Amino acid sequence: MKYSSKLIADAVAEFTKLPGIGEKSALRLVLHLLKQDVDKVRLFGDTITRMRSEVKFCRTCHNVSDHEQCEICSNVHRDHSTVCMVETIRDVIAIENTNIYKGVYHVLGGIISPIDGVGPEKLNIESLIDRVRSGTVKEVIMGLSPTIEGDTTIFYISKKLKDLNVQLTTIARGISFGGELEYTDEMTLARSIATRLPYENYLVKNSN
Image 1 (tube, helix red, strand yellow):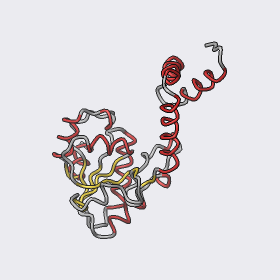
Image 2 (cartoon, helix red, strand yellow):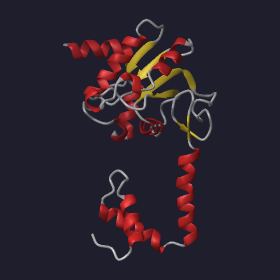
Image 3 (cartoon, helix red, strand yellow):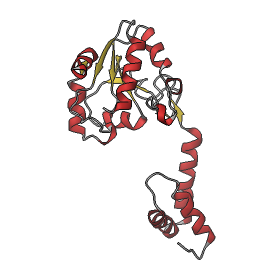
Image 4 (cartoon, one colour):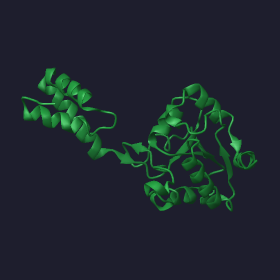
């Protein structure tokens, strides 16, 4: 597209760097901002800048937080003996929206994917092992998306935890294989969490 303003062109170019935003969508957003009061646009920019510079990652579970420890980990009413291991922060949000899970989380920050250059050392696995070693964790729910990479990650971590005194469970496969956790409807996700299975059962089922 040709623009009569380089400032508009530069703004559109920046918006297209966001995931899922093409040039037409970016132009729509830029033109929308152009119609707003300067103070509103300044507040928008300041909010994004402040978010990027001030947001923290929980020292316990690696979830996003305004403080050193997130609201979930610091909540005394949550079940801290049950830890749901998830791939990303978006999965925490998806599970929280079901209003059924009362435990805490551990965000891996990704899944093992050699083809993408992601090995175990790039994930928050050692901090999960340390949490289990502390003796306060009784159950780890393997809450990863049912994909080949997800199952590979679960298998790797289960080997790391096998000698520790902790129960390993997986979310029930109401979620189709190859599906992404964050896009699963809340009812299915809630049922999968509530009817989770011992990890050993899942291994036996998938080996047949």
